[in-house]
Length: 590
Image (tube, rainbow, N blue to C red; front, side, top):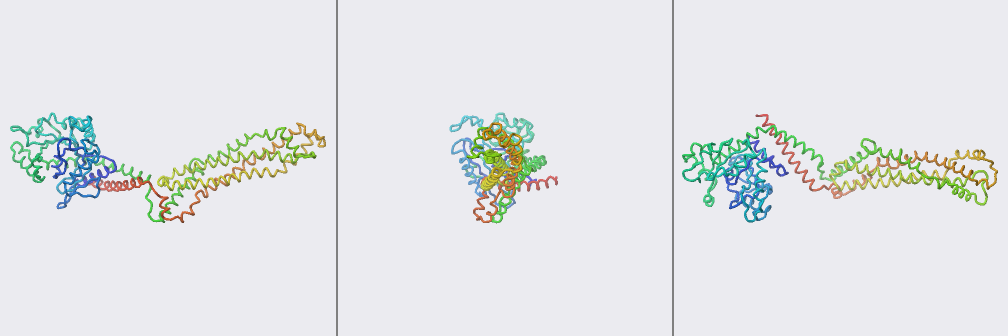
């Protein structure tokens, strides 16, 4: 089970680096030093612990050298524990300044030693009653809120540490522990300064659970005195004197087997084993859920790109292919959006053609004017052919407007589909420079296709203007005969009835041309814009192979924060997968 505790410590350390927080045990400085067996915590008067210290103990093989590591100083090993104390002080000052302020930002320290048990401890600022000079009035509540934020967590084991030479009823630890742990399942009572009680008094009733009963037996400890600290009495000697004190003191001799800091460390580790065993199913479930979340986020962030030019070129081509595929799927109906192009042809263009007003071109005044001008000095004999042509041309030219509008409408739809396809290609989100390049190239292609399409659509209108359908006008002499004698005088020929008949004839012809263009303009647009966009939207493919390595790398530049996040997630995922395998092994071996 020690392996499992060590494993949980590893998971906690990795989670902490990424912002997760799961604590196991909270206690006070002197007791923690006794558990660790090292003198490494800052000392002094007032509030010495001004930031939470998350202390992970890792039991190493016998004979190996003891060392410490800080999470904020990766790969730097401290073998001098006086230097550890100084770094704790310095790191506290970096966060709070050289003041008496406190901070909830924790310091993370790992100690590797053959003389410790696998355990995670948290040293918190001591609860205080009043603010001193240099501290805000809110510090009393701030410290209590900080302590509560740790000990309220269901995974936290609370060391309720109280001095034996003070009234237990006034103990802050005893007061606050039942509030956050009413069942007592997470609270372990520790009684310090047992050796400093007034003569004639002892702590037997407390240690035996008679005066203040807890779910678990109280543990008494004897820490080093200030004189011992000043004389640099080491922890090994201090632990020996602690054992001798309990074994030789008559009042405590019968309790000596469960007194002292060494017993406290073993009891904590054993209790932690019990907690972990009971929560293995929950841990397994949490790890499985976390693995899925990590895999999902890594998938969203995308894979890292190859370092060589060939790999980069392949990646760019593949990303462009995925974008192209998404764009085509929009046009083909696999994704939404392509139906808007059909709406232009089926509704917008016919409606625009229907809205065309030919009143000005085919007014009686304009018909008479154009026909008279076309006749010149000699009036027409049977039908005013030149007048017809001029009237038809001036009327048909107004169709250019709806034709251009249809081209522009389709162009706008295709641009929207480009933006949709870009947003739906995760790989392009990963590489902002490439995303801009692809977007610009696609829009440039669409602009060029729009120009070609507009030219083709207008040519269709111009062709109708420059060549009139003969079959339609072969009927005109018969219509003229039905309307009157073709040999009537010139003045009769410019009569309103005659001019109205010409206007009606021209309107019929123009409507026939509109019906034709209603079908030919969409074909032209599809051919020049939609078909071409599907075929060659990104025309810089051919240029990619000519780009230098530096330029290829620039296209695949990522946000450094994304790269850092992916690396951290990959390491964390590897850790959780390893943990899953190890915990599964432990679970099966239960």
